Image (cartoon, rainbow, N blue to C red; front, side):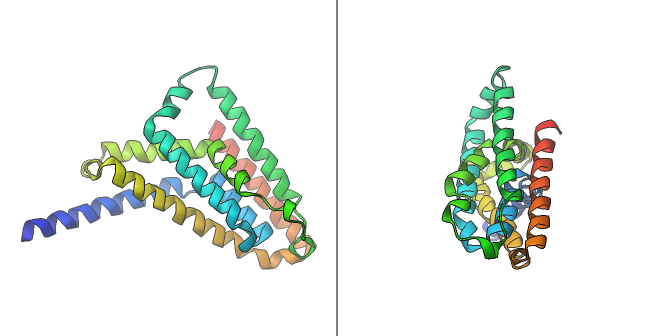
Length: 208
């Protein structure tokens, strides 16, 4: 009776260790998390949900790509890696420009001005930090005694749930700024700060 209880406690310790590692590595500021915060601040919580779901599903797609080992094959090709870096950086810079030039909330009426689900998905799969962070957590989980025994499917499920939770927290944090964005001056300053932070985190992910 005692042995199954101890094994359950050990399982929970392993799960907590994996969640903490994912929170620290995957939850840190990066292009995807900063963009979710910026979009939430610039467009409000309700109008940012589609974009956030695009980011979440795109990041889960990155998780599956990393787990399958596809990314390691692509980056091992000298001619492919620079193209991936340039393409992803260009798209993220485009989104930063869109955030920086977004009008105040009170002046927004056009549905077309809001980032779409597809925009979020494309940024997530173009995000260089996502591949590095997810690969780091996978490598840690594979080498850590005990955590590696959780099994690949359980680890994938836990990390997918962490992706949802992490981006939801960043979105809510950004939406908390939305009430300040009805004033044109405050809106311009906050949007420019978020756009600059997005560019900085992308540069650190690519060149850091």
